[in-house]
Amino acid sequence: MPQAAQNPLDSLAGLRGAVDLSALRARAQAPARPQQPAGEDGQDGAQQASGAYRAEVTEANFQEVVELSVQVPVILTMWAQYSPESQRVLGLVEEQVNRQDGAMVLGAVDVEAFPQIMQGMQISAVPAAVAVIKGQPVPLFQGPVEESHLDALFAELLQLAQANGVTGRLGGGVGEPQEAAGEPPLPPLHQEALDAIESGDYATAERAYRKALDEQPADAEAKAGLAQVQLLQRLEGLTAVDATQLRQDAAGAPDDVELQLRLADLDVSGGHVEDAFARVVAFIGSHFGPERETARVRLLELFEVVGSKDPRVASARQALARVLF
Image (cartoon, rainbow, N blue to C red):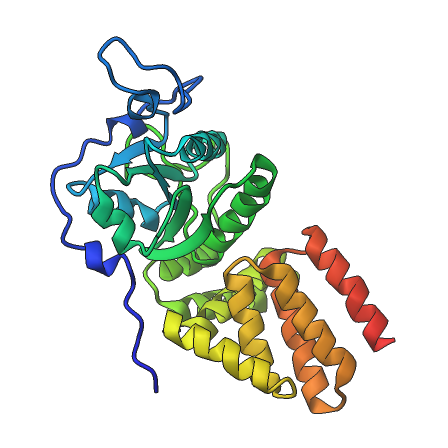
């Protein structure tokens, strides 16, 4: 059994101290782009830029910024003075974050000032970004990236956050999630399930969703929530080393339904939705009997996780129909 991989955030767990997140407390109408000219005080644009949902990450405040990830995704974005491209990408990421209006936070990391943060995140070059959801890192990109790619990337990231119960929104103060204006409260069983997910109690969340479905069999939200919780249960405890081994094992055993489905779970959780769907559809198309049905049922569950309105689900449904009929 391979040893568990260390969460790269753990190596930075000692970077604690006072934190000034005042930049996250206000809503800027037009936050400055990082490549703006130097100001009168001699600071460059990236140092001056301070958006509504941006924190300048340092050794002292790293842990406090990461702790926000239990409420909203935190986007740790690495940039440097020597890299104009990294400053451009930082600006694009900040624009994306601000568009979410409190549903996520940008943590800007000056890797020249704080190289140990970059090293701890296992990043070798800028620009680069790593999201953090409930304290767990999710690599986003390393190298140049365009706005069109960020649009899709952030959409998948929000889906992943929702699947993990990270659905807060920063409003008047940091650490104070708020409901959208006029949004009705969740049904009690749904709220019970979400509270359980946030505390990592997936068994309780599953029971709450099942009870909701017993009371209302047509409750689409409960059905989707149940599928998401079951996915989290299947992946619970999976380390980076385990994931690497899983990919190797699945590549070597294309007829093993459990390996193929477990890898599909991993891909969905990591935002590689098309890869996951294609993998399971291909298995269904080349196998028959109980294993084919097992794969079909799991694929339908993954459709629920991603959401029936997602165009990738519609495309995969068409592909499934072609191999079945």
